[in-house]
Structure formats: C-alpha cells, structure tokens
Image 1 (cartoon, rainbow, N blue to C red):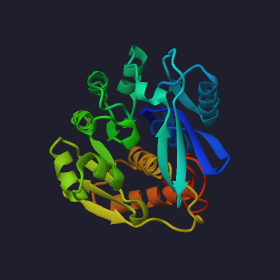
Image 2: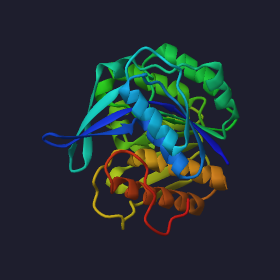
Image 3: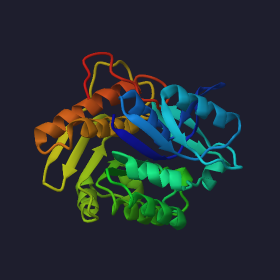
Length: 300
C-alpha cells in the first residue's frame, strides 16, 4: 500500500451556517488531505501540531477513526481554530491567536517518515517563517518519493505576503509537483495569468503544476509541454460547502499517480483530472472539508 505523508495544519473548523448555528469539524488543509488519502486507500501519515486540550483530543479521535497515523510532537499551546462564514458556499476565514504561532517540529521520526514515503505533500505551512522553511527544505531533501507543495495561503493569517511567497518557492525548488487555486495566484502573484505562474514555477524545477479553478474545473501543465483542462463534474447534488474541494482534488491526483504512475500524455492526465473532479464535486455536496467519494461509478 503506497504511503502519503501530509505536512501542515490540523485544526478545528468552526463553520457558521447561520445565526447561532456554528458546527465544529476536524479540519486544516493537511488534515483534510491526510483523511482524504486514507479514504482513497492510501497509508496516510500526518505531520502536524495541535494541543493536548479538548480540541486536540477531538482531532486525535477523528484521525484514529479515519486510520491516519499522526506524528504530532506534544506542545504546551492550544489547538488552532478557524471560524468561517459562508456566502453561496464560499468560505471567509477568521483565525484564533494560536494559528499565528503555528510551528512544525521536524523530529528524527518525522524525517524518517518523509524518507520512507512514496509521496510527501506540504499543504498549508508557515512559509513566512524562514526558520520553519529551512527545516522543511532540509527535511524534504531526504524524500525519495513524489514531493508536492500546495502553498494554500490564507490572507487573514499572513502578515508578509512577499515572505510567504519566497518561502513557498524555496520549498518548490525541492518539489516535483505544485498546486495553486485561482485565489492562491491572486494573493501570491497579483493580476497574472495561470500560464505566467506556470512558467515561473517551472523555472524552479517543478515538473507538474496542478491548477484548480473552482466552478471552471482544473488544469495540469507539465515540463514535457502537456496542458490539459477539464470541467467540474456534476451529478452529486447542490453545492453545500466548497471548503476542502481543492484538498480533495489534490488527494485524488496524488492517489492516481501512486496507483498508476505519473501520466505521460494528455489522455492520461484527463483521466486523472476527471476522477479528481468527481471527488471534488462529492466533497462540495456536504458540509465541512472532509473528502467524500462519489455516489457511483468512481475509480481513482
């Protein structure tokens, strides 16, 4: 069974559906990715940092039930919480104080997990902290499998966008795949096209770039010159919550590559992206960021 190591946030998503209706879900981009990988049949390990408080216990229980192995060095801080409101299913985030102190400890056990993994994915990380980026890049340098970086910036959580962009690009220099949403591009690079970002990231040595375009679907560009776009998938019902759609797309893409190998042509990438869009549509049909499998006819 292939192994994915996910690195990044494990937090509580407090989702406000209406006045007085706030529901709490285990969340964070890295946690969503790790749970999604487990649901897709991978061996999933999560490198994160959360507290020994009540919220941390909730995350522990959830990850244990989902079959995700957690590498979470104990710390004296509390668990991060993000409160989010929804407009037509689209989230706006508000972070608690703990989130601004988030750190990942790259212990010997974590570095060994990275070394042994078939794939490692960094999905939300304090890229604006140079010491954290130094530790991350050093650890990723030990990887023998696929290395993926999803910068996943959150505007209310980042004080210095230029520093965050520089840190993310440093990590991409040791990655073979990167992922960007349209919102990521706008926040990190301003009013530029996805093609311009693809050219910039390819110069860092990244072989595969995955773009998610919300209601417009997804696209992959590769160093071999392949460029494939697919539309969103239908058939899963109305959109309830778009949180986690990008994580579901990334998890499915990684699972596909680990199962079948990295596609070498347009048709292979189209099959991969169509599967990812099916999973993203199913995920959007429920509340919270957890990956959901399509109701019928799915194969990663």
